Amino acid sequence: MQFSTYMNEWLYGEEGYYKNFKDIGKSGDFYTAVSTSRFFGASIANYFYSLLKEGKADRNGWLIEIGAHQGYLLCDMIQWLYTCDPALVETLKFGIVERQPQVQKAQLAYIKERFGDDITITHFNDISEVEVEYAFVVANEIFDAFPCELIKDKKIARVEENEIFWEEASDEILEWAEKHRLVQGEIAIGYENFAKEMATGIRKCDFVSFDYGEKYVRNDFSVRVYRAHETFPLFDEALKLSESYKKDDITYDVNFGHVVEAFCAEGFEEVAYETQARALVRFGLIDILEQFAKQTTQEKYMREADKIKTLISPTMMGDRFKMVHFRKNQ
Image 1 (cartoon, rainbow, N blue to C red):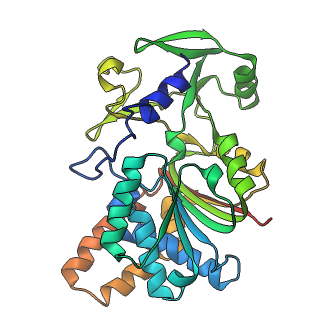
Image 2 (tube, rainbow, N blue to C red):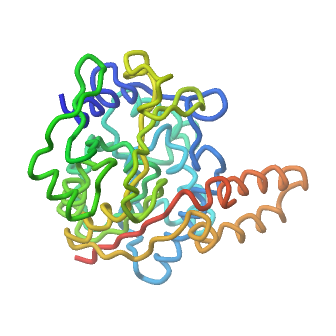
């Protein structure tokens, strides 16, 4: 099978890696910005609130998260919006795009733990099911989880019995590679369809997404496997695919140029593309931390400040992760 099919089965097939709920943090499989600090979600919500005040977003619309894991990010956003304007939790509608039933169940349990019966969540199995007038859509680390093809010297990877072989690439793949001057690396499969489905179902939309990568073709393989906070390049001799298949996470660096191309083709405009550090500061992260300092102890403030350093430090998540904001007005 082609590598994209293999990766899709690895992550989303029967007994696939994302089939069931995964722990995050020190005791889990991976870290994310969401699990690092609740102020990550608060900052994005603060940005959304600024759009509402400017009349660029609809307070009667939807707040939707794609791939919400346990639901931390959406809950952190709802909590901050309530702080800014309690009436918003009455006018806004809240949704999560999540295909796995066990993960949906975990999300609903956590949301009930946070808000009781005060917040109602609508689950969508796929972005194609979302048909609304306006939505502020947020996602953290979803583009790196789209299946990809691997190309090298005009050949693409094929997998048989967890062994990688190389075969002649199709004309379509070669045309894409030539257009983007890609000689070696990953070609994500599905960005175009994802953007099209979002554009079709949501008439007016703000889409904010964070992921790791760059806005250009690297011409090198970044695809790798994560196992208990250890990283193994896919072609590392120490990595045995038969042992990692469906048990560990597999990912790659996002080519944001490809993402932008896919969304702009569907009528979105690129509002912003910047490092996570710059985006979070612009969204009001430092102001939120200062407000927190006035309401808590020095010890708790310092603990939260250390977490925020992880989010914005150039040597940690700050520069490696990027934020992209797309908007569609009709």
